[in-house]
Image (cartoon, rainbow, N blue to C red; front, side, top):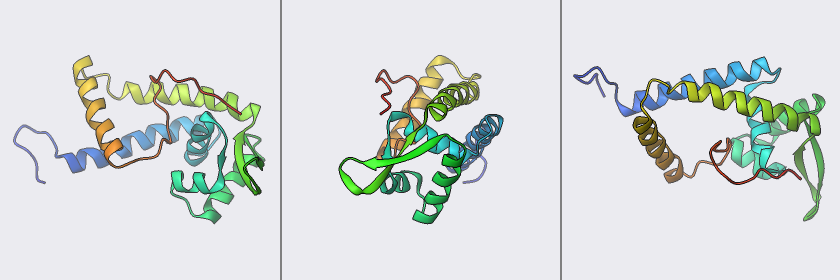
Length: 159
C-alpha cells in the first residue's frame, strides 16, 4: 500500500480520498442552497418519488431516530412532507413538496456540474473507463441509488 514508483497512489487511498473530495464539493453545494449535505441527499433520494421511512433509513444508513430528526428538520424548512402510505395505513411516506422539488432540481444539476468538473483533466476515454470501474464497484457492492445518474434516460416521476 506504499507509494508506487510512478507517483500514483494505490486503490484504497485513491477511493478514500476521492470520497472526501466529492463529499466536500457536495457539502459546499448544499450550504449554498441553504441545506445540509444530509438534507441534500434526502432530497435527491426523493427525486424519483415518495419513500417509506424504513426504506429511507436503509438507503441512507440512518437509525430511526436520526432519520426522524432529518425528516423533521427538512419538513420544517418546507422541502418535504409526510403523507399516508396507500399500502399501509399505519405507515407514512416522505415526499418532496413543490418547494423541495424546485430546490432539488437546481441543487442536483449544480452538484452534478461541480462533481463532473472534478474529472475535467481526464480524456473522454479515461472518464469512460473511470465511470465503468466505479460503476462496477457500486453495483458489486449493491450501493442504493442515493444519487441518480444524470445521464440516465429514464424520466423522473414525482407523486
